[in-house]
Length: 199
Image (cartoon, rainbow, N blue to C red):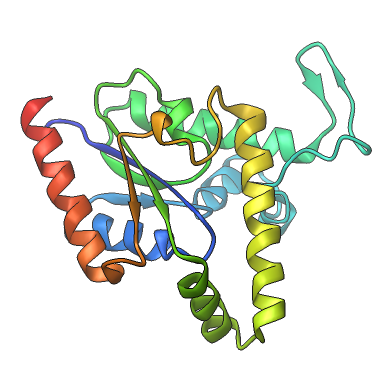
């Protein structure tokens, strides 16, 4: 029986980390989880999916939320905890998968099947990718990247022990701008196969 394998991929906005994660899942025939997990969560909780998506991977709004003990009225935190529970359930069931973001390297810390990757990129390459993808000028693309990365950093650092992007938190960090999407995918896959052989 194939050993369980969980690939956690965190990424800077515009680094193509999501595309690379999808490539790895497809090439290795693994299930792929990103915000699509909210579809299953919404179905199980009998709530509208749009009510969940707008709070996905967002930092808690400290001005519009309260916490008393373990109880909170923060939709951002409630959605985050739902996703963390979902990830743990999949891992505890022995499922192999690729997961993007959602503090998964922290949520599943200690799981022997876990391999964690952080994907970053050069500013100019990320700018061009976002400009092309969303038909934005340079100023708007830069603002979009800054906003997304700020939110990811705040979200991650709120729920995780380590700091977002700190190389010590991950098994591997790689700059996708140096090799491009396909070759970066290949390098990460090689690393995964080597890690599997020594686990």
